[in-house]
Each structure stands twice: as structure tokens, then as C-alpha cells.
Image (tube, rainbow, N blue to C red; front, side, top):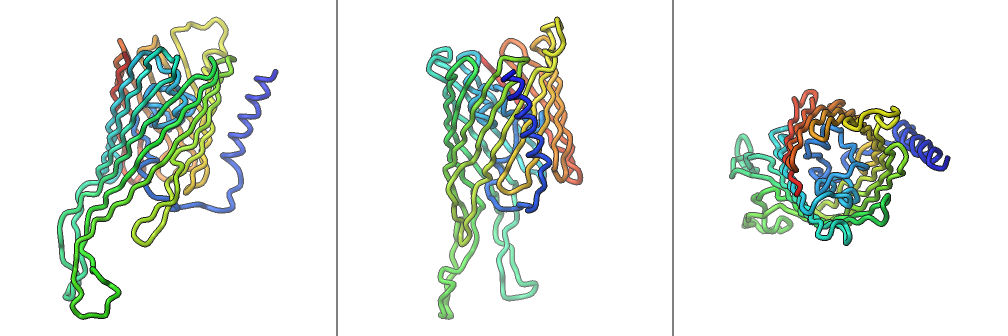
Length: 336
């Protein structure tokens, strides 16, 4: 009865979060938005509803607590994401389980972003009023180190500390713009900034019908400065619920699994929304996935599949992106 009551309360909480009357619309309040992009193919195909899904080293990009249930001694993952506007995201992660979960699991993660090449310009005192300078190649990078441990056979906790930086190229500026002298000189200035952020997460498995609860806080950081402006990282709070729907069918074959996961997400710079993911698994080898994203501008559904055998897996995701065309992702993972 306690488990059933807890399940009902969590479901009501997730529903109220999604459909609560929003008096204020929060937009464009944060920077380093690359930290909010899901680049893992499995996670993207499930609309990012991964808070309660243990995922080896890949859990560092969703809920670090999920890494505590890692099977095997080493888990390695690499993902390629062809994002909108010719932006390319590459992520890698590795986790080490030195004593079969006795002392916890240690992990490392890397996120790299290339925004492509852009033509630099500067103001000039003639028609048309500007001249070309040099090619700008903006980029971003985040490197993290995480740890997760099972405090019991049902409850896990985890965290990650990461260093994030963004390089926006360089430009020609006045060395002393406040000076009244007529011979003000020009100089070249690099535009970059960095921050240290933290992720925290918990995961609880009820032991009833495969139901699991989880929550995590991502990108917790101090306010950082860029030139004359201050901004915050994309702090996000997520609560998740998942269960295996096959467990509701008595005496059904163990060769099948149909996992449903729901995440209620509260971001700093966007209205609250719900992520829903469905994953069908056959014989621990073939995976078919669908995700639904509530309250998004250009996205709604996500699709994907995966194959896994002998510790090696490949996942693919496809996301229609409205007027921004589509996004495709591929992930390769290996567990030993």
C-alpha cells in the first residue's frame, strides 16, 4: 500500500508540474546552452527522459546516480550529433568499476561543440560602414569527473563536477574606448569565458513492477561574467518516474521489455515541460524507441533504434525539427 501511495503521489506531482498555470514565461536567462543539448542517441530517441534509466558512463549526461548500477569493469561511450544550423556536438564518456560496485563507480565525460566558421567584421568609417576582418571559429568544451555509489540494493546517489568553457573567437576593439585622445589605438581581444558547474542525482527502485523514481540537478554554478554582462548556466531540476509495462502482464515472456519513462523538467530559462520515452527491448539485443517532448517550439516526437551484442552497442536517433529540418545522432558504446 505504501508503494502504491508513493506511485500515485509521484504521478500527481509530475502531472501538476506539466500543466500548472504559468504566469511568467522565462526565456533567454542563461548562457552555455550547449550544456542542455542531448547528444546521446538513446537519450535523444527517448526525448531525454533518462532520469531513472541506469546507463553506465552515459548517465553522467543525465543522472549521475544511474552510473552506480553499471555492469562490468569498464564502460566507454562516444556520440556524434549533427545539430541545427550546422552545429556539431561530440560527446565521450568512460566509467570504471574497480571492485564490482563495492567502492562505487568513477567516470569522466567530455562535451565538445563546433559552431562552424563565420566571417568576422568591424565598423569602418566609409560606405557601407564595415570591413571584413578574419574567419571566426566559435567552440565550446566541457570536461567532467563523476562518482556514483549504491547505498543499498535499491537506492543510489551520484554527482559530477565539470569545467565548461566557450571560445567565441577574437575581434578588433579600441584599446581605450573612454579616452578623448584622437590617436586611440586598436587592439585584438579574445572573447572567451569559463565556469565550474556541478550535477547531483538520486535513483530509487521500489522493487514493485519495475517502478523507479529519480531526481537530479544539473549545471549548478555561480553567476559568471562575459565582457560587461553577467549570466547563469542552464540550471535544470528534473524528477522522473519509470516502469516496465510488461511487468503488468502476468506470466509474460522475459524475452520482452517495454520501459516507459516520464520526466518533469524545471529549467531556469524556459517554461516547465514533460519528456516521455518508450523503449521496447527484445532478447537484450534489439531496441526500438519513441520519445515525446511536451511544450517545445519546433520539436514534438523523436525516434530511434539500437542493437547490442557481446558488450558492443550502436544507437541511432532521428528528430524532426520543424523549420530547422532534422537532427540525427549516433552513439557507439562498449562495456567490458
